[in-house]
Image (cartoon, rainbow, N blue to C red):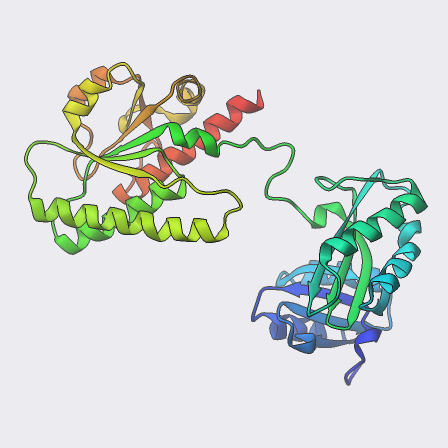
Length: 357
């Protein structure tokens, strides 16, 4: 099929990554000759509209199989103008597609200016379909999803499998983020070349803030050069601040800013002898053998201390004071700038396994 088409003639709506619209359109055109495509309709990015004279459902399934660049592929069942009453009336026609479903939800994406919101559409469409079908509304894990895609004056509706709309947080997941507030990452500083020390500080600070740990303690041994520790600390604060700004802008919750302390490592171990001390070194047991104990110590105590080495590992004399010695990756020496994140990821896994039980 050659030539263009009107927006009200679209059969399938395809969602893509930004700047991949033309690539996806070309791939669809090449793989499916009986189609016409329109990338970025009305200049809206991340969209490709497809018109075909074959069955839209079958075409959508084939696009999913052959075009991985297509993020989501929805066959269109109804088209109306972007008027709330018209959308609701058109949505009623989708009732037969929900007859065998246990639950459904409405998902609306609105582009352009209108005298109604996406929530208005979700509520009104959900209400009429619930009345028409008796199907219950489940916003968390719906079996079916009624999608409403609004592009300026145009509206496309259809029904998709609920699995097409995965949630980052589902009923089978447990929130482990609050437990990171209990963690004090005790990090030996990376010293030496000032530029390298600062860059390592940035990476470690960013990791600590990513997990929103309660404390990052820069723990030195003996005398250290002031310029080197200053460069490392400068990087730590820069890394924390850069990540914190992103979290503040994008998170639904108010992020916790990681506190930074500096203390002699031996003094810290003596001072916190009543608290769990976890050493992460190759001499320890594989993490899978101690994950349950790691989770228990974190859950039951107000603070747990994760000791992370640098160029020189944690001194072996401290091993005697540790509750656990953990080898994160047997046979592999983990780089200094990855060690804290690896330890915290291991904790996340351990916590989730424990909470799941």
